[in-house]
Length: 93
Image 1 (cartoon, rainbow, N blue to C red):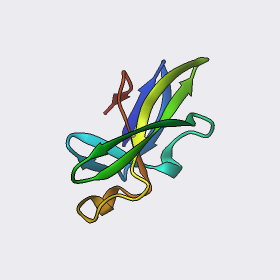
Image 2: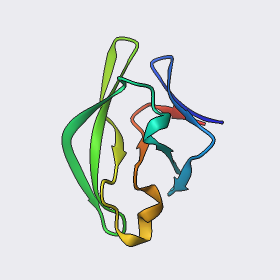
Image 3: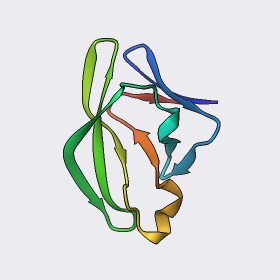
């Protein structure tokens, strides 16, 4: 089981993650309810496409843009559609 933890709170866990560039992409339904808040932030990866971000809230604190996903990934990254990955201090393992 792979878990994502931030602010001493497990925010996601799954046996079904996809690893791309050393990042675990969790199914959205593996993320705890109420943890993710949509952000206006985007970035572009040449081979995955446009990433959208979520802020993560747990234990009364918010970590801005600490999760990302590809709503419409390019064909080479199709396996991460419907999944979310974490960074900015979120421990995954």
